[in-house]
Length: 220
Image (cartoon, rainbow, N blue to C red; front, top):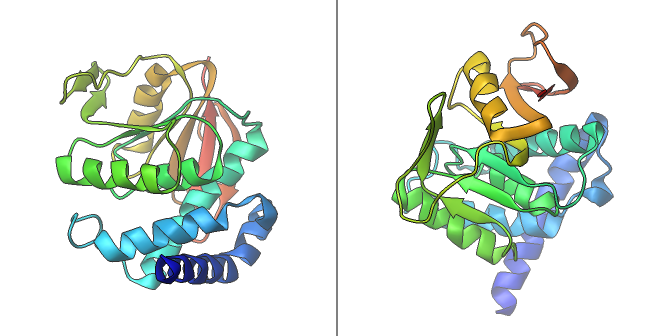
């Protein structure tokens, strides 16, 4: 409807106005960001956050912080040399941070892993709304022992991804170990740590923000 189109345009304008300068400071050109998709996601998070029990910080400022952190991940991928079409897996996607931001801004198949049914349903709706039919939502758990699907057909092939991200699911060291099993040789594990955290072995690039330092660890 024209109303929802106006809301989406207004949200896209809000997100761009508030974040573009910071994103440019990271080294990502604002013209490379799909603000219209982020505006649509912003509306979905605000409309459905409570119903789907997505996150504690879904007010405007909390959402902008989550989106900005996702754009740090996008910046890191572009800095390292992400290629269009490279498969990406985001573990413990929850409300979609950073997985939905990655899916909005990078044209490649993103697998969003979320064990909880209600949040997985939200992610399914969101990837459909932003027109990303090549992205999939799977329910399951991954750890050092491997992949355990919670729904028939939700299999994940270890060692098949170019990129792996996870936020607040594992400790950084655990995540590098688990993520290394998900990506192929030469792939990148994206790690969220505090800005003051020491450098991690294998780090090829980092994008530092006020709250998070996003590190890219090359595997193999």
